Every structure is written in structure tokens, then in C-alpha cells.
Length: 117
Image 1: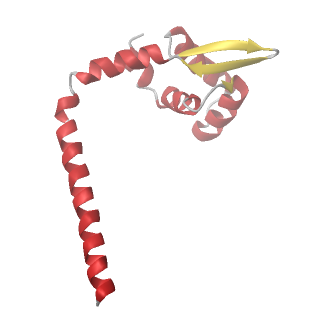
Image 2: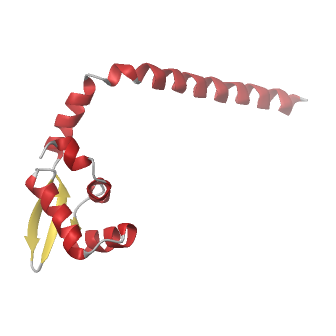
């Protein structure tokens, strides 16, 4: 399965978001995802399998639990591919950052003028 096919599913994206903060048990992932997406435990297990089989997650046993973690290699591959297109949005984001900074500077200047009045 292609990386974008894997990430195209909102449940799988959410699972990766949950794992971004560190390892979680399959049960903890399942409880969150089932509540948010109203899907069954077997459906969550299938999404975990897709993520594992495609290399986006790793799993390790700990007693009766299975702990999942993000595997960063496929994400780096996607980032490398996106790098080709980053030039389309980076200048816009840089311009936005400049405007935000300009607005903060103007507010500080106006605030200090008001303080003197």
C-alpha cells in the first residue's frame, strides 16, 4: 500500500497523532479511536495492522499488552517527497510570519505611546 493511501484514512492519521507523544498500548489506542470514530475494536485492529504492515508503526509485546510506536522512516520518505513542493507554500508562510511580527511590533509601539499619555 502506498504511503498516501495509508495516511489518506482519518483513523490511521489519528492513530499516528496519538502515537506522536510516545508508545501506547493497543487497548489505549482502541479506546480513544473507538470513542472518536464510533468504530469497533476489530476495525481498530485492522487499522493498526495496516500501519504496522506498511511500516508506519512498530509493535512490541509487554506481557499481555502490545505497545505501538511511530516508525519515522516512512514519514521521512513522505517529507522528502513533499520537499519538492515546499517552495509553493514556504514563501507564503514566511510572509505571514513577517506580517505577524510586524503587527506585534506595532502593538508594542502603540502600547508604549499610550502608556506615556
